[in-house]
Every structure is written in C-alpha cells, then in structure tokens.
Length: 406
Ligand SMILES: [Zn+2]
Image 1: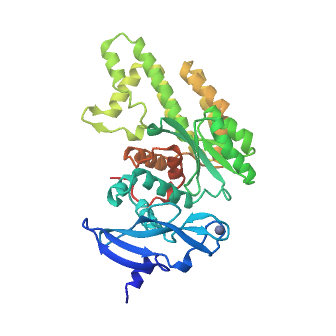
Image 2 (image 1 turned 90 degrees about the vertical axis):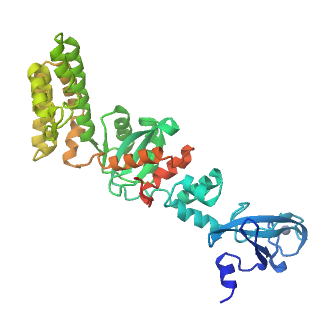
Image 3 (image 1 turned 180 degrees about the vertical axis):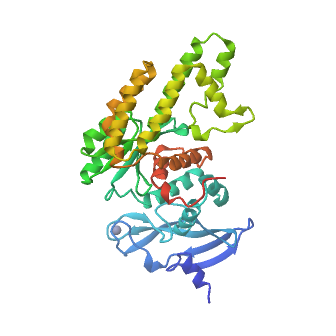
C-alpha cells in the first residue's frame, strides 16, 4: 500500500503531491500542484492557456489522527489563448470559493446530523456562519417535502421566542413529518401552502385543527371538499378555560374568606380529569374538589358538564354522537350560566367539524411530541439565528438522528 491510497481518499487524485509536513502547531499540511495538462479556461473550457499568476491558498480538510489537515497549493490563474479570459483554477476537491474541501464538508454534515451547530463550531474550529451555511445546504439536500400522497393533515401554531414570532405548521399525520412552515397565523399563513397542494393536484381527505376561525376559512376556501375535524384536545382545553373563568367570577363574588380559600385551592383541580385526582401532602384532591363544588352550585354544574363532554368522543356512532352533542348543548343552556351558554353556542356552530371525527378520528395530539422537540431545539440553543435556517430544520425534523433530550 502506498500513500497514494490516502491521497485518493482525500480527493486529490489527478494532483501532484509535492510535499507533506507537520507544522509547528501540530497541523498537517499537504502541498499539491495541479498537473499542467489539467489546466483549462473556466469560461470556454479551452486547454490553450498560459499561467498568468499564482497565489498561495489553503483548504481545510478532514482531520487525520486528530490533527487538523490543510491542503496547500500555489493556485494558478490562467489566461485563455482562445477567449482571452483570466480565470482561477477551480480545484476538484473544493466547492467554488470555499476555503474547506468537499471531504471536510461531508465530515461536518455527518457531525451535524448528530450534534448541535455550537458543538461543531467548537470541535471543528470553524466560524458559526460557515457551519450554519453547511447545515443549510445539508438540510436542503434532505429534500423538500413530497406532497404527493398526503391524505390527512393537522394544522397548529407554535411561538418561537428566539425569532419573536408565531409559526403555522402543517403536519402529515401519516408520516409525522412537518410539510409546511410559514410565518404568522391564520388564513394568510396557509394560503401559499394550500396553493401548492392545489397545483400538485393533491386531494386531502381530512384536516385536524382547532376551532380558530382563520384556519377553518383557509381549509374551506382552498381544500374543499376536505373534511375538517376539530381537535378534541383543543375543545377540552377551551372548556377548561370556561371553567376557570367561571371560578374566577365566583371567587370575586364571594365575601366569606374561608369559602374563598376553598375555591382558590381548587384552581388546578378543576382542570384535571376525575381519574387523575390523587392523594397529596395537602390532602385528598378528590375531597377538596367535592367540598368546593358543594359550596358553589354553578361551578359544580359546569364541572360535571365538562367531564361529560369528554364522552362525546366515546359514542358508538356518528348518529349517537350527534344526539349526545345536542343533548349536552341543551343541558348547558338550561343551566343559565353565561360561560356554559357561550360554550354551547361555540359547539353548535362547529357541529359538523366535531362530528367529522367519527369519519376521521384524527387530532393534533400526535404533534405534541414534535412541539416538544421544537421547544427543545430552541431551549438548547441549537442555534437558529435566521428564520430560513430554522424553517429548514423543522421541515427535516423527522430526519433528526440525535436525541433531543438531556
Ligand atoms: Zn477561454
């Protein structure tokens, strides 16, 4: 085996290796020279060229035996006898004007699929911008999401603190991949993606979303006749919010300090599902809640209606679910409590989308995992200083090999 094997692996085939030495700083430098016959004009590809000038240049290469490696060359600039252009020699082992080799870029890419940008900056001795640039090229290569075959989508929004903005995300519920990232919220944010779907002649069967007006309008306008399914978790969350509002109102009205304390203590218990109530150092959650509910009839009514609402998704068929929903709404209205009346009004207004769950039992629930990943991406400063870069990262999140935890 000769050193030739190494040079070939370094992408130096076709070059003369003039010398190899170790610098005082412990770096390996490989001096190369392009053979005269390989020189050509970059404008017209003619080989009838003269070397016009030379400049010493170096390219960072993949480390060898834990030592940094540089490829050094008296880079020639040639004058073309055919077209007169003066062009610098483009080495085969590097891309364009980059000061690192293609091999080194692949090495950085392999690292980036496992560790953070900051880690690579520190271990490879590159600038932040260089690593971010390589990462963006890598993520772009991972590909734009394939829209063909999309059937069931979920729409949700996340707030990205580092970028000071809301992003609207669209997920493919079948693969778990994020297929669209756009700035802002509501109809406007979704229009470009929906237009792309239309152009690609994709027929979406069902979309899960919350009951916010913006997304509904966008789906109705662009994806008709797609079935819209209102996410059950968002519905339950809304009901919990109504319950909190009611508790606050009741609390304000109460004069008795002791009673106020009882009500104050159950703020979080009201949100819990009954089966999740536990024994805690502060006492039995169930009995504390019962005491508070006894104290206050409207709150008790609302609490039991909230618990009952969950059964909407456990009916045996769409028809019984429809009956159940109408019954629930009537009972809520009959209480005469304002927040329950508004909840009933909201549910009646979104009846079709709620019942569609029985045709497509989908929700934005599976996105929770992805949303957690996004949170971790931000918190652990994976380093997305620019929106475009962060967007690419989200679109390729399902390719992520490194564990986000810990
Ligand atoms: Zn030329």
